[in-house]
Amino acid sequence: MSKDFIDNFSSKSKEYSFSRPIYPDELFEFLSNMISNKDLAWDCATGNGQAAIGLCKYFKNVIASDASRNQIDNKFERENILYQIFPAEDATASYLSDNSVDLVTVATAVHWFDFKRFYNEVNRVSKKKGEGGRIAVWCYGMHQINPKIDKIIERLDVDGDILGEFWPKEIRYIKEKYRTIPFPFKEINTPNFKMKTNWNMYQLFNYMQTWSAVKKYQIERKTDPLDLVREDIKNLWSAEESDQKLITWDIYLRVGIIR
Image (cartoon, rainbow, N blue to C red; front, top):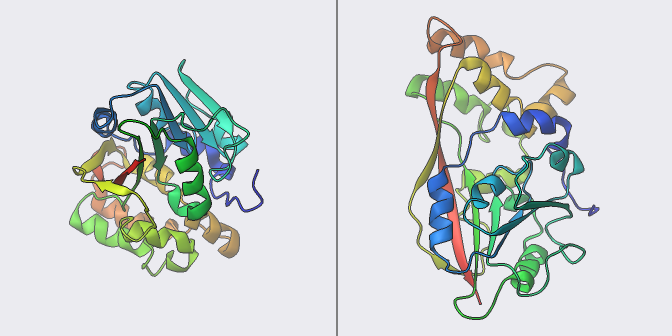
């Protein structure tokens, strides 16, 4: 494991795997349709494989890597996904040889990377002949439920009064919709995608418990920051906390050509 690896998720890897929204299949269909060769995809910083299980429907093989062993230990198994433990910036010890990868994906993680070193690896492993390889990186914004609940949730955002100082500085890239990350590739226009799910209030709070800022607040303040909004959200939810509401997330996607 790289000495520079920032591990914000291993402490709750199992909770993370079951408390995160699911990327839409339309996203992976779009990514597969933009390239004719579908032999190998590399899903980097795969976590438990949330994106890898979407890719494996369209690519013959998927290598899903993460620097965290705890995340890989809670992976979603599929026959054509090979999980590996190595940092994004150093795939040399893996099965990723030069000019071998058709598509590189990074789902809500590239903001943690050493951009220059990672992009060097992307250029090394991506196919150069013909149409070349592709890279797709994306993240998703704060969830949306309805204007009144969303207003309360804003207190937990990067600029909010509760968790603002507890978010890592890299999260600013997400707030800026990934438009400010270095991206030295010829860019492809992409459609808009959303994640959608129906959750009850318990599921929503389980999801927010996986946030790195919540964990940092709990460690430093010895209290749960979600308690500061729980009652307000409960009052706006419905008669029963077990009632489900539609929750959506905007996906911010950038796709580039590698030659």
